[in-house]
Image (tube, rainbow, N blue to C red; front, top):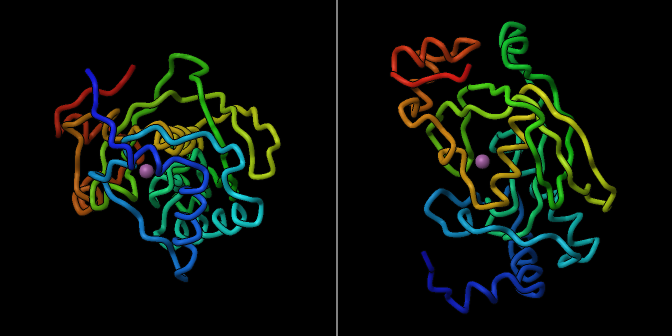
Length: 223
Ligand code: CO
């Protein structure tokens, strides 16, 4: 299969165009507008960060991503979600959940951090299946079976190498955000029959695990 490439799309990925786009975004105060599913920027592989933004601009951009993630609120945000096709994402999870949920889902707090040019690999065959959502797909959630343990390789915002293992909910967050940088949305990996509105999740599927939803909606869980 081939795609016609619009030359203006290629220009958008040049270092100068990206820096200009970021300057434009930062000119307005407050959280950045989040683009939603259907925008092509969410479906293209972002380009590796190779200094396209000078250090001061990168710092301001990361600060704006953090502010936007917190305001949403969300536990992660990738640069393409604000229309910037760079491999940069931020994550942070205060994990304000019940003990029961924390234990069942491995949802422990994640301090704020920046992932630059991240990639991950599953450490074993075990998968965990829980409802997740995305700020670019507002109003909906679906169950995604993801590797329970991953090794994440990335850089931080200072260019220091990150090579770490993640488990539990933090493993889900780093997979979800890294997928964004590859043009993948969680819906691509979701059990489609689990698709539920936020209202339905709040009313019916707040249990710590996904078994009841699987049996009522008719989808399979791993293992
Ligand atoms: Co998302």
